Length: 69
Image 1: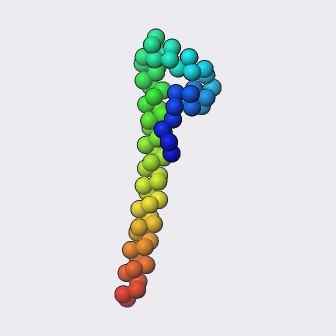
Image 2: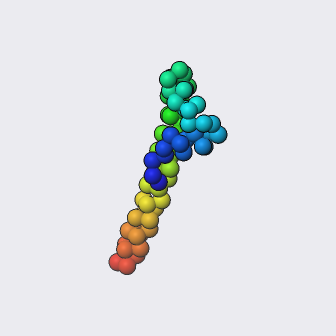
Image 3: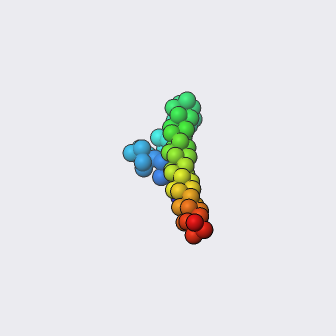
């Protein structure tokens, strides 16, 4: 998943990009919390992908082990 642009974030929040920039300038704590939320979503999505990949690897290993039984 490509990194979200400020425009993507604004669209997802249903605000203008200028609002996002104003939050950054005039409401830094709000901006920080919003950015942390987007980062959390990004990490969560990556964690799901890593988990799915690990399950595939586990399945392949188990299939290999069954060949030798």
